[in-house]
Every structure is written in C-alpha cells, then in structure tokens.
Amino acid sequence: MRTDKPKKNDLFLDDNADLEGMLFNPRARGPVATGMVQQCAKLIDSVGIPELLDQWDHEVHAPSRGGRPAAVPMRGILILWLVLAWEHQPLQLKKLRDIITERLTPETAAILGITLDASVSPDGWYERARRSTNRIMSLIDYHPIFNRHRRLQKHEWDRVRSDRAEMAEVLSVRAHRADALMNRLLHATYLWMPKRLRSDKISVTIDATAVRVHARGIGIGRLASLDPEGTVSIEPDAAFWARGTDDHSDDGKTSITKMKYAYELELGVLTSNDPTRPEDIPHIVVGIGHHAPAFGPGKAARAMFENIVNRGLQLDHVIGDRAYLPGAKEADLQNYLRSTGAKLVMDYHKTFLGYQDSYAGAIMVDGNWYCASMPQKLIDASSRYRAGEDADDKNRSLTKTERAARAKSRLEQWHSDVEARAPYLFNRKELPDTKGRTPWMCPAAGNSPTAACPRKPTMLASGTVPLTIIRRPVEGPAKVCDNKTSTTFPAEAGGKFAQEYQYGSKDWREMYGHGRNSVESFNAYLKDGGTHALEDGSRRRLRGSAAQYFLATMTVVAANLDKIIDFAAQKVEDGLDYEAGIEAPRPKKRKPRRSTPQQRVTHQRGRANRNPVRT
Image (tube, rainbow, N blue to C red; front, side, top):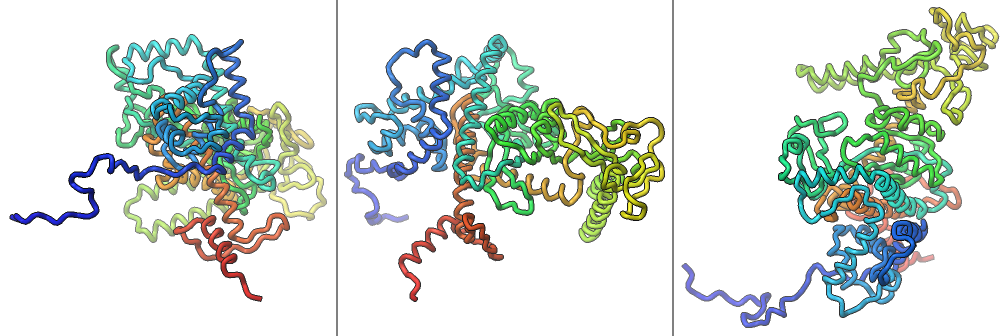
C-alpha cells in the first residue's frame, strides 16, 4: 500500500481554485458564417415560402392577428432550422437557442429579422424560438393533440381521434399545406442547381424509408387490450415498421427485434434520363411525403407526384419498387402517372409474373401487350426463372460453385427467352390521350411488322424482311386481329401492370437498376451516422407527426445541398467543361475517401497559387 503523497498534476487546477475557473465549454462553436445565413435565406425566399406562410397565417387568424410582432419571425426560424440541419447538428430547440444567444452577429441577426437583446435570458430565447416554431406547426398540424407533454391515457387518445374525425375537413387543408411547404423547400434546392442540369423532363425513383422516432412504441395487440386508464405512446400517430411483412405493417406476430417504431418518409429521387450516363446529374430528392407505416403507399405517392407536376416539372421515367408499382391501385397511381406522359418501370412479385391481363385478343405478359399466339414457354419465362431461383435457395446440397453456375445458366436462358418475345410484342401507335386511352398495333400490322399472321395481310413485299410466322392465330372475333391498323385500349386494360420496357430486357435492367441504386444510395447517405444521421430519432425531439415531417424534410434539404456541392466539386476535379461541351475522360483509379472532392479541388487551387508553374 502506497503511503507517499502523489505528485501534483499541473494539468488540473489548484486545490483551492474557484469553480468559476472551470466554466469552459468545449462544445462551443464560433459565429455562424454570414454567407451561410445568406444562402439559407436565399433558398427560402427564392420559392416564396415567407409569403406563403403569411398567407396561411392570415387565413387562420383573419381579419387580423392580435399582439405585438414576434421576436423571432417565422422566416427567421425557418432559416435557423436550415442552418442547423446543414451543419449536421441535432435538430433540437436548445441548439437554436445556442445559435441565437452565442453565435449570431448583428449582421446575421438582421438577415433573420431578430433584434438581439442582452437582457433576454437563454431560457427566454428558447421560449421565443419554440413559440415561433409552434406558430408554423399550427398551420400544418394535421394530427393535433391537446397535450404533447405527457403520454395520453387510452380514453384520452380515443377522444383525440374522435375530435379529429369531426374536424376532418380542416385537417385535410393542413395536410395539403404540410405537403406544399415541404415540397417547396425541396424545390428550392432543385432550382439551386445550374440551369444546364435541369432538363425539360425528369426521371424520378420513388421509395419509402422508415424513420425512427424518439419514443417507446405500443404494438397493435397491446393497444387493443389497453384499459381506459392505460397509457399510449408519446408519439401515438407513429407505428411499428416490420421488416418481414409485405407492406411493413405490424401484423401482431413479428418479433419486436425485427421492428422499429417509426414514420415512413416517401422520397422521390432525381434519376438520370439516360441510365448509361448516371453521373450527368446529382441524385437529389425532388418530392417527399410522410405517413405511418402501411398507410397506403399508392395515395401517398400520388400526392407526391401531383405536387411535382404542379411545380411545372414534367415526368420522363418513374421507377418504383413493388410496393408502388404495381402494388398500388391503378386508379390511385399508375393511371395518373401515365396521364402525365410518364414511362413506368417496375418489378413484379413472383405471383404476378407471366400472364397478367387480356384485351381485344391481346394478352399482357410481364407488363407488355403481346400476340395471344405467343408460345406458352415464352409466357412462363419469368415465372420459370424465379421458381428456379427459389428452388436453388432452398437446396442446401449445392456447393457455392454449382450454385453460381446454375444461376448464370438460368439468367442467360431468361434473357434469351425475353429477346424471343420481341416479335410478338405490340407497338404503341400514339401516346395516351387525356383519358389514358392508347392505340396499339398488332405485331403483324403497320409498315414495320415483326410477325406474319394469316389474319393480318402484310404490307411488305414477300422475302423483304424475315418475319416470325404465327402458325396458330387467335380463333374467333378479336379486335386486334380484325382492325386493319390499330386498336384503342382503355386505361383500365392492364393498368396495374403495364410498363414501358420489356421486363428483363437490357433497357429494363439498365433503367430499373440505375433508379433503384440512386434511391438506395441516397437513403444510405441520409441515415449514415457520419453525415445526417436520419436514423437516430434522438436528434429530432419535437413531438407530433407534422413536426417530425418538418424536421425530416429539413434534413433532406440539407442532404440535397451537400449532394449538389459534392457533385459540382467532383465535376471540377474531373475537369469537365459544361460551357464548351467538352468532357474529359474520368480517371480509372478510385478516389480516396480520406478527403472530399471539394477539399481536393481547394487544395489543388491553393497549391497552384503558391507554386505557379514556371514557363
């Protein structure tokens, strides 16, 4: 046992030092850059958001809103939330308080419309920031609750739902406002891109991602068995998102370890119109929606695309996973998208493969119209391919080498069968009209037939072009066979499954693969703890569905801005000259992850200034 007195450590204060000497904040940040505040202000002002909020506020509090002007205006608080998100900080009111009390200069405060007052305590500024945020939330809160400071009892929650049903019309208006505000914020980032990157038509890939909330959830089974005095979740409008169910809903059977209490965020990610040039544009989010898991993806997606179209953007391709395309009802989503001129690209569950629909003597197979005389082997090609995959997955006796060889052979056969379908494929004569009706031509009709059929005399001279001979034509009356040129198909015919490209073809694989890669990559970037950490619910502490929607959107807006800046830096580093139309070849070597393109470009420019090349 040591009895000698340890030596004094000079790193620590003297034993008799005053505690005030220890008041050092290692987490303190410097003043917010004026340029940062100006840029955020320009973004919000560029799409008229302050005027929109003032208009809604006037509608709610007409003829006039009493009281003195707010110490923190709605425009100023929006700018502060965006600054916070762009700095990758937790979106919490105390962080806003810290900016106002410690990091604003007279110049940046003037941009925000805030008058700095040293006599106001930090708690006072916290309360002012909270009131200003709540003022915005009151305009868009489509799921109001009378008390968010505690967990409600079951009978109170039942009363809340009853009250909401009585004011459904008012809440519908608020929901539309919420979608309008969030999508307008995203539109500001789209307009922030140089005009040469904004094409006349855009392709969008839609997907939903579960966003965890900072609350303890209650499953449907436990909620149903609660007595009137039992307490529900502090976030009662959220729900459990289950990994194993088809629609990710809580079926009451899935283990809690495979679920998370969350909202779902609908994201429409900008995708290149040409999948062979995926790096022509930054893959940012241009449309957003928000709802509880398993709410009904079709209606949510419809609202998102309506907002995109109403902003003046024209759709080229729309790529979606199975929950949307073809999972949605065609009246909710697919037919609307086609009416805008969008080309749909989708995948199918194994139960939907092969024959899907028929009309006027034509059959729909894997999303395309074909001659009904197409061989059964080709009709079943995709079903056979998927069944082989499932069988090999269950066959434990296969070695890794055998499994890979069988998968390669099976894939090649599927691609060959898809190509063999082409001569039987119907051709679209014209684009759909305003009611979704489309004229289609039989493969044996027109000036460029791909098949020869006894029921359809060809216009080509004999032996001019090799044609697939249809040896067993459709029997009985059939419009597609009897009409000389084309047959008009209504929107309802094959509306759920129809898509632009042959399922499994090279064009389909490129477009679908590129779209899915774009959205999954953005989701991973958004949730990465090293970037915006959207997966961490503790970084977003405001209560309520509308508030969570708002904070998640601010995170996505910041991610968009980062993506655009990284894209620009990458192009500068690659030496691309858009103005001259010159594109330098990209180097083959992989770029290091220890630095960003922007850092490398800045370093190269600085080095060139320090050490100019001698001539």
